Image (cartoon, rainbow, N blue to C red; front, side, top):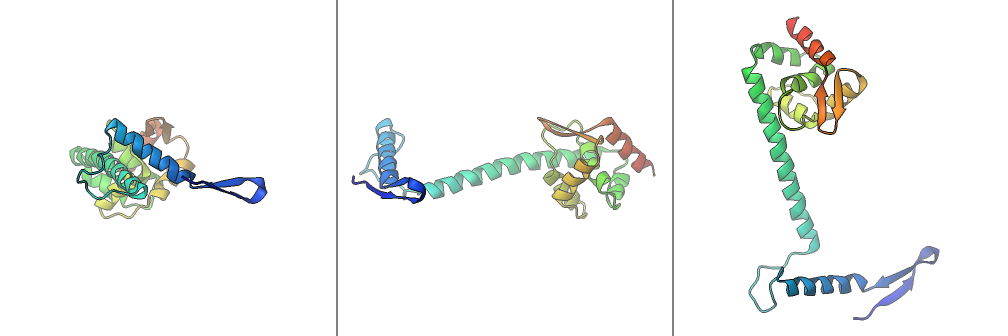
Length: 170
């Protein structure tokens, strides 16, 4: 393999051909370990590194979507089992963004998984209420004391529970 060096701005050098050399060596190493098929065997068309990266990104999106759907299902189940389901949905139709952001946290207090602003937005969309994810995050961020952030996600505080229960009584 031939390498070419050229001077880049600010006194640095670029080595052309180095990336291809490393890719070839990695390919040979994978073949030696048996991670890639030997040449001569019929294989499916080789994918480029970009296509492999796109496939892994799609897989990660599906996994996070499955987790989000699982939390969303838990929230829907919690709403269905709530004794004042109609009152909760009616409270969500009010223009109070803090209340809209707190209700999913209130319903999902015992849910496994993080109730993010995106899950909150999807929860309200299922009930025909438009509530953008940035608005949910902003409402919780601006109104301190109603929710707490931890390494497992956002959780409702005792003040938030009182706020939601007072709104449901009205």
